[in-house]
Length: 225
Image (tube, rainbow, N blue to C red; front, side, top):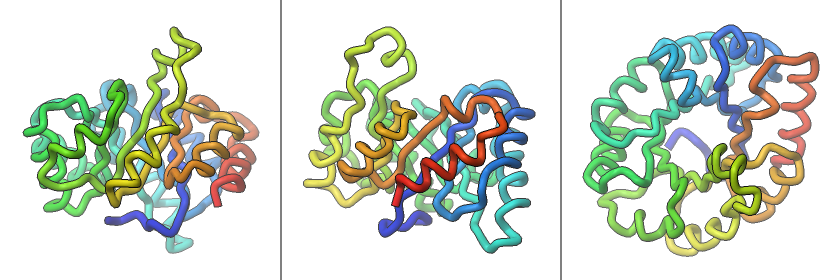
C-alpha cells in the first residue's frame, strides 16, 4: 500500500474543467498529506488524459520537495475491473476506485489487478447500508474502504447522514484504511477524523479556483492531524 496508516490525508476531488484543475493545483500548498482525485465527471469528459494531466501538474510542484504525486482515479468501476485498473495505471494513477455495488467478481478482479499493478485499491460503498457484507464476500480486502454520502443524496435528502457510524463497524472487523466522502465543512472534517477516518474527501470548496484556495487547503490540513 502506498498510503501510510500513520498519517491522515486530505483528498481533493477535482470535478470541473482541466483549466480549473490546473489553477487549483497551482494554488495548493505542497504536502505529503494532500491526495488529488481525478473526479468521475473530469474523467468522463476528458478521459485518461485527465489523470495524466493531474499527475504531471501535481508532480511538477511536489517533486522538487520530494513529495510523491498521489493521484486517485475515481473510475467508479462496475465491470471490467482489470481493464480499468490498467487504464488508470498507464495514466499515472496511484489508486483507483471501484463501486461496492459492482458484482463480487468485478471487485475481486479489480482488487487483484490493483495489487499486480501496485495501485491502492479503493471500494466506494455509496448506497450500501452494510459495507461489511460486501467485504465479507471478497477474496482479498481493498486497501481503502470509502464510506460515501453521494452528492445527489445530500442535495435531495437533507436528512441523509454521512455514514460515520460505519467507520468503527468496518474497523472492528477489517484492517483497512477508511475514507469519508460527503462533507465539506471544517466541522464535518473534524467529525470524520474524530471517528477514525484516515482520509477525508472534499470537493465543493475546490470546484473552482479562488484567491483563498491555498488558505482553505491549509485550514483543512490543520484539522487533519
